[in-house]
Image 1 (cartoon, rainbow, N blue to C red):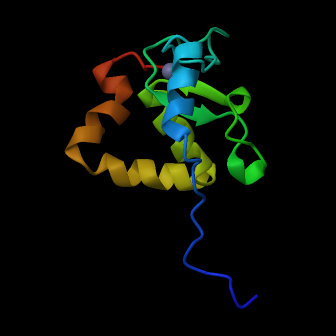
Image 2 (image 1 turned 45 degrees about the vertical axis):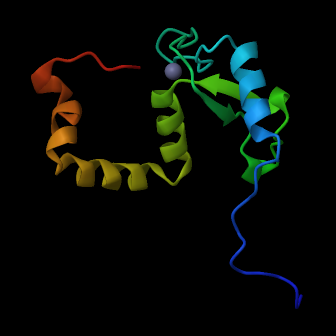
Length: 117
Ligand SMILES: [Zn+2]
């Protein structure tokens, strides 16, 4: 117990993580593997992120079999949704709505801009 460092709570990525990322992106042909809920097809946009299918917190490994390529947008979306409950996301959305940059994005009805998912 005496050797436990409370400050070192962040999980470390493996030393060869950059090589794993390259492998996964190549395997998935730099295409986002996220299956869209509306079409049932893969997103297919340019992917430059690698994501754990099963979160490390839930026992997922850093092996390529547990990794998939994601586009930046889906990666951010997934990362933020993993951060907490729906109410936390709603709180964040409300807070972001106060910023001019996000106001137009969230106000989809008025701008009639198609959602990217
Ligand atoms: Zn995507």
